[in-house]
Length: 426
Image (cartoon, rainbow, N blue to C red):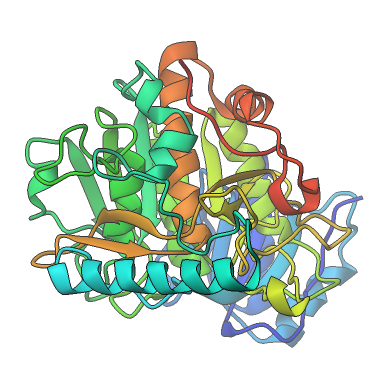
């Protein structure tokens, strides 16, 4: 039976609703919705003209303002024959923020500070545990030429560049003045009212840098993966790092219509133990896979593993048809903040990527910055997905399978790291 329901719960919402239509019955669904809510719209075109109404015909989703009582009346319709499959509150979403206080590593003072901190911690651990190899900031990772993430994922050994592959990064935008991206093909669109796609936050520029940064940046180390991929920047989060489901869904439809092979989303909202996934996003992700587009999203940073707290994978990464990415450190340990696949109804972790102390591009004049999060792990997977897509020609579900099957297996639970550390093709 179709899953027609008005979901509720302690999530931060906008007051609007997402309505999922059957793929072959969008016009019928719009008519039914109009009759129920009192919106006078005899066609999808008229519906789209209504204030606060958004219709995404390709995805088969509408965003509407309505009273809950109006939507509940749709329950009276036979679910077996209904063109409306699900109704959910529209959520507020956020950039899945970095969890370590970022430092500007372009300055000598910051480098000296980190080196001093590292030496002090290593000395303390050595005194307390003689012979221990456990280090919080490892001295044996040489990042003078390439970042540790590109080394352990074997990007540095890959002959692929992402040429011919379109990668969409849905985030806070991008700094189009960054010198490492001069001459690159970048298509952009803002889905934030009153703001263009220029990044006034930094999060998006960092994620674009990891997934699609230059082979030879102006300043080493190299931090980018798919350096010849075509970049699509969808601004779905404001300069304050917030957005809504409507903006994300509009950007997904835009990316699919633009022929993007991969969509990278380092964003979301937290979920609670026992929560199910969004039926709307799940249907959208399935429809994207059928069209040849793989959606990859951050698992979330709500855990405190050192204190025994593991929180479930965030929305929308918790959808079964969206690839959820966990974060690892340079010693291939699960990041303390990385969420886990603890909910039984969806919400599994599918794969892991480098996510602790990740160096990448940042809006000028800072130019580069090092931060941490599953947000940083996600563009590693997206960039490597572009490399696999280039060399194999695979898309959608087949590309998903290639990524998970080629991942480096780790001696860690699959609920924490999925199939393991993402690996680039040779």
